[in-house]
Image (cartoon, rainbow, N blue to C red; front, side, top):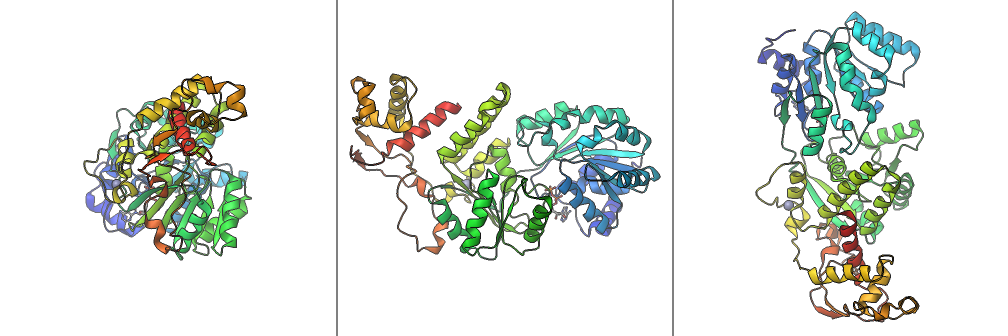
Length: 521
Ligand code: ADP
Ligand code: ZN
């Protein structure tokens, strides 16, 4: 194994193969660590240049590097790219025919392949294991290493077997694990499961200074969405939705409003999916409406906005998805449309999961809720989630640029919880609102809730609570309206008499908020 490759040789190779004149961040130290035969654990945000950290040592070291990667599309992308650079890279996965598999294997055994991308499922097959034991392997790279952790946003059970397989190929092979997801919990899990406690850890800051983070109320979302996109014509953007159905609906909605958009989700025919993706990459359409199936391994540098139509399941996933904006270093905008109802829906999805999984999902969800509701600098919150402390506010997020007054609602919170208790914990927010306001109806009568001590205590409240259902401002004509503070955070500070004749009580959204916190914590 060459241990004395000089800095000049590495730089020359960087220039020759990739056309770059300088390493970014810690790339060179990481590459050297692998060449020197040590294990590495690389934590870098999306777009920082992780691939090069295993591609370059693979080129300069004798033998073939194994790259374990979770997605076929991602492998194909990278293999095509390497081939275009004149480097022999191949992949082994379920998309290949028997003849193709044999050809790839023969090339690896002959020693001409520098990088062999392989899916964890394929790695698990005995015949592939036998083949790899015969090949001359230089080192093993584990891309998207967070897939190994149940705490991550993209758990793949097959990843759990990787360490044993590597050991049965050759226990002395250097390993480099890479991920853009780095909550301390996931990091620990990865190191433990891969037996990489001794690895040199290379962690760069996860701060994406060029990304603007904003939360908006989901009220009138379609109108807001169309208005935003239309005022950014010619800019590329991704809209993430939770379900395939929603993806189709939103894509159609944008289409009829004259916006060039296409859908992408796992339910589409592979050909359609591929051609939609190509259309987006080649700028034939501006907007990709997608489930989270879209994005991993897609290297489109000039995505200017990432919009979450629905609340994501975790902050990690959210950060990963928003990370696809502004990879070229220019500004990107990340807007999350938020409503409590989405959280309730997501919580319901988790009902059928096993107990431990359900608990995990709940914790991930509650972190999302805090993020969306707190008035603290968004970047501060996101980075602290990744174990990074930021001393100052960022000045480039909605909470920094449009701070909102805060209000302690302890009294109101305790009323809500008390009303829920006194009514036997089985009524919805609308009914609890009626009880608090002292509204008489057939239900309050038949359940005798009018006799409860809590009945009517909330007739008069000091409403300074963010109210989702509040009417929008009348500034619809304002093209730049989207640069303003999210509307849900407009607070009414006046004392207000709750009118028993009001159709919809301001209590309702507040009760929902309190109940979500109670449910999730
Ligand atoms: P990641 O896997 O961390 O998300 P990539 O490996 O896809 O990031 O790299 C992101 C972009 O940065 C790619 O377009 C890549 O070619 C580019 N890049 C990587 N290293 C360098 C470098 N040293 N100099 C210039 N560009 C680089
Ligand atoms: Zn901020």
